[in-house]
Length: 443
Image (cartoon, rainbow, N blue to C red):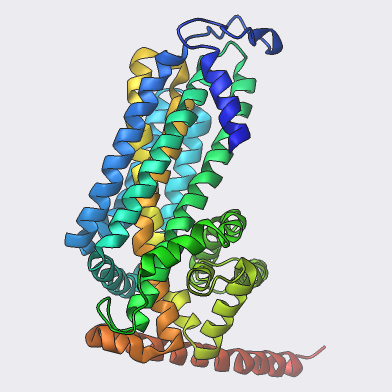
């Protein structure tokens, strides 16, 4: 981060109030078609993006507390429409590559929503329980506020350097390569901060559930400080390591599960998807978000925590509930929607003043918005993971917290285990019928 911060500072200063202040342009490939500008031409655009992302993140979280069902439906259904609208706007602006990309995104999102439509009632149940738990712990909100402030400070420096890249005299290819590198850096930094919050909140929620309430006599003193100490000291390396992989693997798992359930009788396609599914399931053993609860409470290493959490789920059957739940995907849809709105607002303003920089500013502003909204909503996802870990360790912990919620979870778990048993019995029966049919055909 120190190295990236220095590079961003130098690039931003090179175009601050004076072109080529630090005489860096001699190292870049100039292009007559690309007129260079100043850092302050583009930096305000990113300031607006940061402000919009922050407002959207906290608005989303506040409305999630009071209007959970409505917000979930908005996240699930509006995202497809919004992607399609942006695709049309890109085609209208003659940005054909981005138009096709957003159109494909809209199509995939629509197919995914169709594939999980039957899981949404249970997902809403889990999210309502998590929101109820989070809102009973004001310390959790203060942690999210503090880390969002840290992220905004880093974004101020990051956007300063990126504004210098957009204003530079190098050709579009060079600009895009630098923007991709800095975007990957920002994504990793955002994931680390989100997962640090995840560890802190998960630890706090887990302790509250396992001790029967924040005011319980057995509750350790200063539980938030304990989780914070684990997160930013001995477990910080595990958080940085896990942040590289968990988001990508989890998203891939959601998509494959959704498409796998809707393939039907296409044996060839089903075979290919099953291969990918089992590969991803193996990776999930080593990279899953439930590891962060173990890190928060016990201070274990990441891979050790991930294996322990997954073995706990499989030994108790709770993995069937985890696989059925789509709360993480729904929260991700809300995060994507927030990022798209942020990028659209920044892109519209950029088009008015600098039409040739719309995609550059819009795409990087979208990433900023996603990270800020994700930081606000990660507290809910942390509560979800802690609920599942507690339910797997001792279901009576959830029963003591909320009896009605426990009964609904137990009923769903029973249904899912029955469904899996029925599917497992169908496979050998199907194989025997195939073998018998093949044996009766004349050669």
